[in-house]
Amino acid sequence: MLLAGKVGLVTGGGDGIGRATAITFAKDGAKVAVADIRLKAAEETVSLIKALGGEAIAIEADVSNEESVKAMVEKTVATFGSLDCASNNAALGGGFNMIPDVEADNWDRCHSVTLKGVWLCLKYEIPAMLANGGGAIVNIASLSGVRGETMQSPYSAAKGGVIALTRTAAAEYAQKGIRVNAVNPGGIRTKALVGYFKSVPGAEKETAGVHAMRRLGEPEEIADAVAYLCSDRSSFITGHALNVDGGIMVNPHTM
Ligand SMILES: NC(=O)c1ccc[n+]([C@@H]2O[C@H](COP(=O)([O-])OP(=O)(O)OC[C@H]3O[C@@H](n4cnc5c(N)ncnc54)[C@H](O)[C@@H]3O)[C@@H](O)[C@H]2O)c1
Image (cartoon, rainbow, N blue to C red):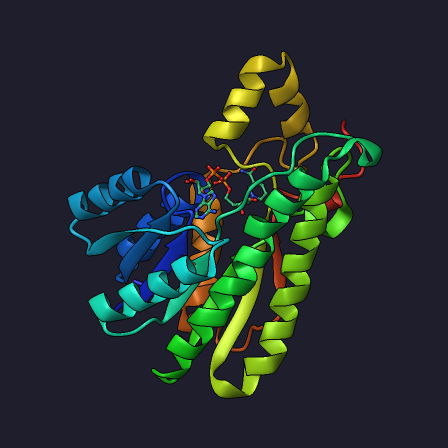
């Protein structure tokens, strides 16, 4: 029960890593606000949490829209009385193209959710946490933001921005009781990735092969790292971007 008595907020909590994080927060004792642009998906996550005996609410929110993010944080605090931990997880890819072929609209759409969305969340989460003496925030970045990613320049640039934003927020609020960290997932078995594997023969084996562990990660393995970084057990960690990647970064060759 890493988060007993705390109130957590997860954006993009209607699916994949966000859903697993919301469920893990609840299993660890937190009350959870599950925010997603798809309300029905957020409600499904809430049902799963309630079935486990946890407490949660669903919030329809678009992280790229300032009014929506403000209302999301206000609803969380109005419902549960405070905000102690948040995982800014919602993101949108920018398609698969070489740099000259990226459409400006695609770039803007990706950045408005993946980078600006994280900044907007920080903008409203931080004052809510300060009002209650502090808290912990974990932004979900990506290894794409650390090492770059061919054909995904909008996404990798946005994720690199998320890591820089994480470090800046950590520095600004280190003395005010708010820790801000990032998690960089490797290849995680979510619906989108499974769909891609179904359409491209051999892709699953190839993707698993870039991890030193020769397997994909599960959403719950990211959620566990997020819960730890949100908990008091990581009280001296801030401004860190933690690779949770089955060893991609130590695996230069496939064997
Ligand atoms: N799956 C992977 O292998 C992987 C690898 C590295 C990083 N990540 C990162 O992990 C996070 C979660 O990824 P996932 O694979 O679970 O994604 P997913 O697509 O399964 O879930 C993302 C959720 O975010 C929601 N969402 C999309 N736009 C939104 C918006 N504007 N406002 C609010 N909610 C919105 C979607 O409705 C969806 O429920 C993302 O930040 C992603 O970039 C994933």
